[in-house]
Image 1: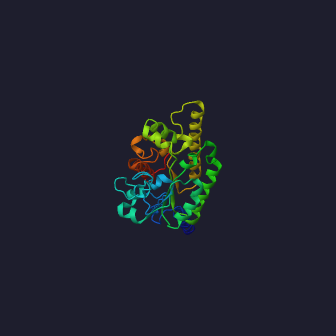
Image 2 (image 1 turned 180 degrees about the vertical axis):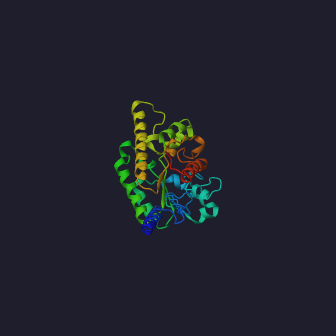
Image 3 (image 1 turned 135 degrees about the horizontal axis):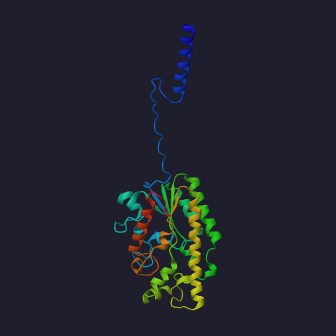
Length: 292
């Protein structure tokens, strides 16, 4: 009887020991060590090593250095000027900005041209592509000629798809379209600026700048509403791509003054304006979270 009881006790102890081992305890009774789970790699890289830019005259630095000429060295996106300190200059340093950047923007470009520019940009295989385009879609001879919101969306979606198909891990930073109505309100007090606007600069917004009749007010408001709609497209399309970051309307909301406008046309950014655009973009690109 004693032998039988002893054998039964040993079997029971063995079973209990097996349960402890299965539940994660070491044979000696101490919990087994488990390695900590690795932290997930962030999708958004805050320090890309190369930059390509697409867009319009703002990104080309038009009228920022000399009249009626591009000045890409002061571009907010890829410029090499140490006083502007472009996005590329801040991310890569002076040497990097000179050697690992590409500017495919074109003065006068509208959203319809962006897919073609993106095709050229992906050939450079950049880690970051910046986009600023849309002002020319609203700046037309007449409000009826503004790019439709549907077409604006189609061309932008095509451009994003092109980048994502060719470069799955490259990032896209998208700037909002500036508030053209604020440009009118800031520049209309400058007699020289108004004379230059008569040459045909953004007539849908800047034509007859002193007119305050109902038709003129409605015209300007229609342009502003279209810009707001364009920015909604940029925001919505970008939100569907994990490697795309929209500026949250920062450029549209920026309260620029005459100091940030070109002295030659009171429309394009001056060197100071380019610097402020670079500050906004760099802050958003390097932020731990995207703009709200």
